[in-house]
Image (cartoon, rainbow, N blue to C red; front, side, top):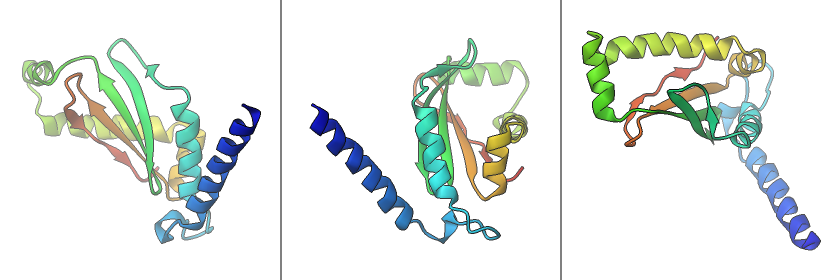
Length: 146
């Protein structure tokens, strides 16, 4: 059992080292040559270990993945797509209106967290995929600047 654990841990470390050595130019800060893809992988691994995480009565953070310098977080709204559409209509709001509001709210949230703001300022990105219970992605704001 102990040998298996050592082999698995060694493979994971080798995989991460290989990933870092294969990172492209989009992974390196133009000013500091800091590898933001490596930090994105570290942030994703730390966050993924805490998921799923209930944020409030309506939203659960479910997954976190990495794509280059971008950490992509999926948040599930506790409604289906038809209820989402009905709520928009009831509030006299379009998807474009909600997109603008959520873009601002997401940027304010990410940029108010010291470590996340620093990650973004070095060239990293944070994206949220807001998904309904029936699997529809209804919003996908990206924070690429703080």
